[in-house]
Length: 290
Image (cartoon, rainbow, N blue to C red; front, top):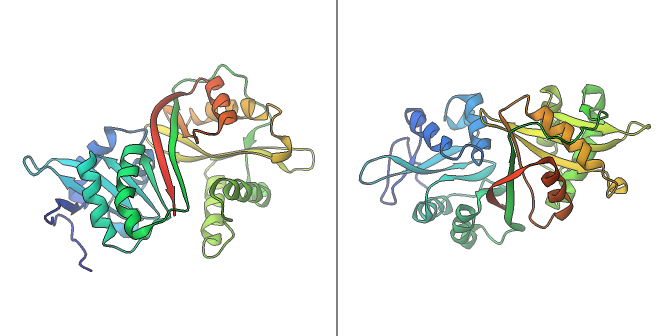
């Protein structure tokens, strides 16, 4: 397998992006900043596309006529398409299909994900779970719903209880346990990071057990993205999530100009909660779990 060097292009037009491409890559991200929040947040932290620091490679496609950057894809633990049109997504997928799969999911705007997966599935498939319609919702001002005052930032003393709730949410959502090797150490490190950085919120019952939890999983210059929302199963259907999420989104708006999240289209209860908060659809994403 031949590995591209930064700036080297083949017949497909695919090029490995390096730090010399950062200005144009920033521009591409900013064309769709809320959708591209995960990659934008990573870049804001690392300030480099060096794979060993950035956590993956970025492949790009330039216009044959003008040389302008038209599309890209981050390839790391997740595969994330950025910008582009159908021919770009096909070309990127074809290049990636010649490499060993390193990602555990493909996530991004639905047309891009579904087009790339139509190519990649021939080599990488079948998928474990396909979620073809996930509305991306955005709020740019505090909600009028009263926030639950019991929701607070989780602290170091809450680690084990918060981790147990996070594991339950992870298993419910993804269908596998985060405690399965080899991911357990990375899972624990991620929960510790969220708590340490003041981005893990929860409420607790009188026994100290988690009732509700949510993470501010991504903070980019444009948006704070909420992830990992969970209400304990025995307490669902009691209206807990509305006030709890009001507290979360208002806190998230202290970290970024907007708050965003994406939700499965079939999750009617959650979508009703987010509508009450005033969150509006911005795009439709899709996720392929591998």
